[in-house]
Structure formats: C-alpha cells, structure tokens
Length: 273
Image 1 (cartoon, rainbow, N blue to C red):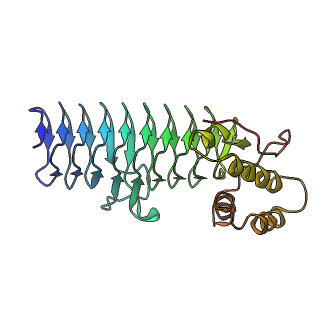
Image 2: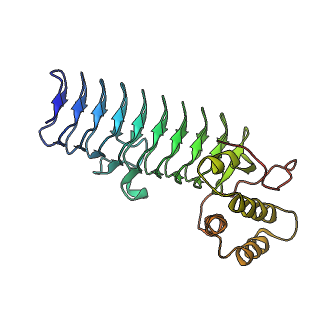
Image 3: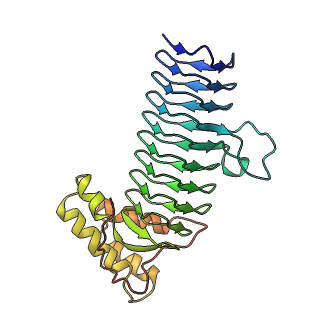
C-alpha cells in the first residue's frame, strides 16, 4: 500500500512501489519511479525521468531530476538515477545528465547528502558517499565509495575523487584526489592518507602501513611520477589498495593530479574521517 497526501500532485505515468510515502505538497513528474518504502517527507519536487531506489528518505524542499544547468542542453530525455537507502536532507538539488555525459546522473546506495548540497549533471557518485552541508559538485564529477566531502567545498567539473578519500571543509577541488587520500586548502593539496577513515572501516594495520609506504614513494622527490608509479606498481602488485591508487593515477583524466604541498613530507601521514 502507498500513502499519498491529499495535497501531493503525482503524474499519471509515475510508477510508485508498495510502501512509498508521498507527503504534503510534493510534485511528482512524468516517468518517475519510486522504489519500495521511499519517503518524500514534504515539498519535494521529483522531475521527469528520475528514479529513486527503495528505502531512500528525501527531506523537505529538495529538487531532484531538474534539467541540467548547461547551455547545450536542448530538452533531451536524460535521466537521474538514485540508488537505495540514501538520506537526502533539506534543499538538496540533483540534476539530470546531458548528451556529453551519457545522458545520466547516477547516485549509488547508502549515501548521505546534507543540507544544501548539489549534484550537477552527469556526476557519478559511488556507494556510501557523504556530501556535507553546502557542497557543490560541478558537472561530470566522479566520487568513489565511502568518500567524504567537507562542508562548503566546491568541486570543479570533471574532477575525480577516489574511494575512501576525505576532503576538508571549504576546499576548492580542481585536481583529482587519489583513493584513500586526505586533502584540504583554498586550492586542494594532499595532506596524507585518510587514516582515521581507514581505521574506522576496518583496514588492518598491515594494509595501512603498505598504503603509507606506497604514498611516500609516489610523492617523493626522486625521479618522475611515471617512474615512481611503475616502481610502486612493481613492489605492491599484489596489494589491491595500493593498486587502486596506481590504476586511478593511470586512468585517463582531464584534470591534473592533486599532490602534497611543498611543505608536506609525503610520508602518508594525515587524519580525515
């Protein structure tokens, strides 16, 4: 059974699963799909071609699936796909994709989007990501699982943030952040690894030591990055965490790589969350 408030407006083409709740003054557009036990608390706008996975809770005054803020967008039937068991707090906005980005913006499962955060067109957000209050993602941003982006951060278009990374508050992110990395600053620089986050998520002491050693080699001053990358890949070929970093750096990207500042020692120390 579904629960529709009398003031909600629901398009006839919307597919609403059993157990979904649509609160006061919500507006549901054409070709929207709401999964089992989705809750729209009140004053939520879900625009056409948007799907929301089961168990997701959306708080008041969110706008999900609006057209992208892109001058080349001409009304193409692009989509927003939101996964399961997400918490989307007040005033969050998420926009559909564009032809330049494959026509879809995609959000994973078990994410937490705090007040006023924004997911732009063509972003790809992994599982268990946290965007803190006021985070603004530009178009085509990719964020790996368990990454946390601190309050008031701005992330430039096409930037990649690796899994388990931690970005400090009020950081301008215009370069790719390696998996497991911690970064902060007016323009982001690496401060080490997200050690607190790794410990909280059950990474062993041995795994963390290997990640720190690999980080130290990668960002030392000896040789070129390509040479150091090959050396780390040879030494730690059997370690999946280190190879996550290696493969992330080797992947094609339109953005440069975020590195430690000149004052950083490059040994992998850091905190994070």
